[in-house]
Image 1 (cartoon, rainbow, N blue to C red):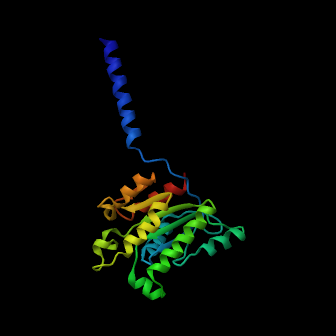
Image 2 (spheres, helix red, strand yellow):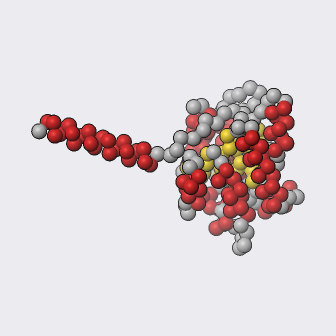
Image 3 (cartoon, one colour):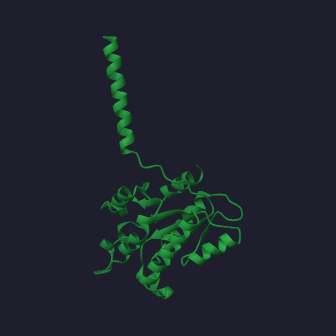
Length: 206
């Protein structure tokens, strides 16, 4: 009787472990400092992320992170040539027609810049994190009729990211979950943006 009990318990443990393995996120890369934060679509996302990084209080000499809305592949090359390369690139997805208008650029310009930026980051072996933190209000569901710029921004960044860092409300249609599963990309979801503070700390303190 005792032997049968032990067999049943052992089988239950094995099943539990198999369940955990089957549902676990793929192990992602280990991003390093310093970080370059930019956007694809000139949304307010990078400014919001700047506040998160400030509160995360990451330490790195001379700087832990830098915000550049118009960061280019040439910026990455210049940093490498100067001996101070960025190790991680965070691209905040989400397009703002107002933001692009103020910068005097089009969505086509942004997509071109983003493509070159990701290509150079991959060439340098940087970790690319795609982030969408403004929820559905920054998705096409909350945009003007016919405005698909936010979805274009997602298409340009998410499938080519090494990690996806997403506000859960903006993934209510499983847009990012589907991409993450298809491309085997670790997906980190947060219930509210303040939760990003601890997630950023975990990502860069591993």
